Image 1 (cartoon, chains in turn orange, purple):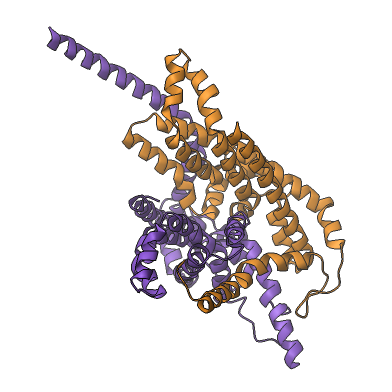
Image 2 (tube, rainbow over the protein chains, first blue to last red; image 1 turned 120 degrees about the horizontal axis):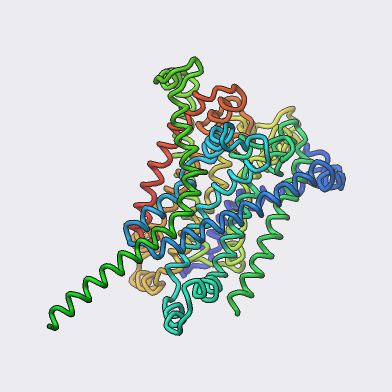
Length: 265
Length: 292
């Protein structure tokens, strides 16, 4: 305990709440409040309604939700496969080669996502690989953006892996593929699911690269929220934002359930 | 004889080692090839396009044009000072909040730490959307003001200025500083604090002489990550919708999508990549030193 006087402690907590609540709790509450309202011209929102949600769960918005979910699922799975492969292959490399591999795979974090969007747009708007105007270009850009995070968290887990298990399996005659499939991947499952959750959340909220690339028939939720607020429809935009947050949290929750089961096994 | 056997073993071992490392290289190849095709090759094309003006040929004309334009210099300056100011704000605020959570815990402090994690999984533009309702022209704060004083307009009109972006960036990125700090604090031996306290040091002095030196690596790592993320932030600036606030990523977007000036967009992109990759390299070095 750093502060022993009770008065000082209460004063600190008061300062904490004064800083924390308006900065971090209020924004989420405000978006939630606005999603149930039609007006906001005084302290509290007014005109309670469910109409925002009715429009946020059908038609264009429902399609955007499906688009976002499919994009995020596809991008996370692809990123997880690539990132895990790179992490496992990197663990077998020498020190210097591993450092180069790590640096390569972390690069997409450092490059601005808008630039990733631009580069994908420039590269795949021309033959031999013409993807511009299709949904694949969005999924591809998301995959590039989240692969770095998948690789980072899986490779951290690979270095923590106890080599005794795989050595025991190998000494009992298991082939490398068997060791990978029966020993290493199951041991990595908790961090694989954590990485999947992270990738999914990032892809669900991705706006920068998506704004550069999305074709009209593949509009993810963040783009729809931007379009709504840009034309002044703040309240229906908030409802879509709440749907986005809820969907992200639901998937994260489901993934963490898988994770606890995996770590108990 | 024994010598010869040992030498032969050594040679065979080396051969086996190099065969194994060759296999390891082979297995690392497919993911690297994918990365090269879908990430590095597009970046190379961006660099190539930045040297190809629409008039044809290869020249540095796009660079000369962009560097000469007032909009670019303005955007560069806005980006840099916004990122520096946001990082400073996040460091101060994150340090204070993490300090209270870790060392002056209150009931529910754990839940607050969990909430910070959840906060990180939401997109940044939600903060700007929320600020529109809090400080917007007909938002909470201005509504309260006009309700109390009867004035026609509230005093909070900063959302469309860089200050609005600054507030949103500090809000969104502070958790990125808090997380490594909380991890570092949880490893700090509290006996040190007790000893310092029992020897008569007051809280500010303990913070300065015991906690701050321990937190420095985490602060450096979190701070440089936030600096890079702020330099590259797009959603917050886009949602602010302010004509006066243009950052480099925003300039890339508007040049490419709104003006279809691809060589110009590529030039800005190259500059932006150089700045942020350079800083990120620094961050990696710092955080590896810090062992974070």
